[in-house]
Image (tube, rainbow, N blue to C red; front, side):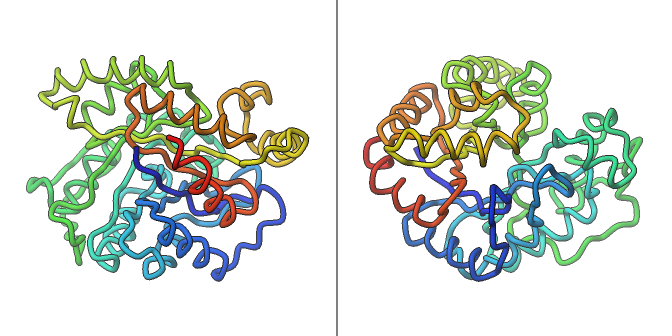
Length: 308
């Protein structure tokens, strides 16, 4: 199993939101051997949220050779042309290290903020992914759909990666979502707080059938689990406080569900959870410490990664 790290863009309480903090975190992740550095995407949220693409660009040099991933990028909310332009620049400036996960996002507020109908998100996503591929040179013929058109657009400079970065599709595991992953994606990104090892294994099996229907090899198709919010402590009272005061107020799920699905507590329990995901077929997990971020990356490497 490979390990990546989310940049700390979300304010769980007292977040500094400084360049020094981002750079220090990125350098620590690279030093500790994480293979991916990634950013989630929201324009407006229940708590302050630093802009993802800007943050990813800011840590290019500090990230070493890590993959720079979006998990997900709001290609519909931002628009496929602006997304293609900014991510092509990051890919070029990083020497071809970008991996894109596209998704519609789950927040109606993001859509309202830019004047789009939330109910159109799925239809727009299908077209937006196709638009990205044309803009990055993967598909030679222009694309014209209901919402987007590439006619007359020659977006230069293009990414370093021929045809552009891989485009994964984010899905929590619904049947429609998995069919969309198989049809549109170069990989599947699931959400840690919206699944369990058993649910992930069941969804992965269903995805395999859909991939075969599209002539794709299920064994070669990559997957990852994002938004694995965590905090390692052997102190149960501290773990309860972190969950109740930092995580639960920001996430629209019951505290009991978050307690079941997120590794906030002992290192041994975290290792057991990751072992179960590994048995379920997970290939990469993207970790997001909710406090004392850099030190928590170190503790993960010392006490959890070695036990998986």
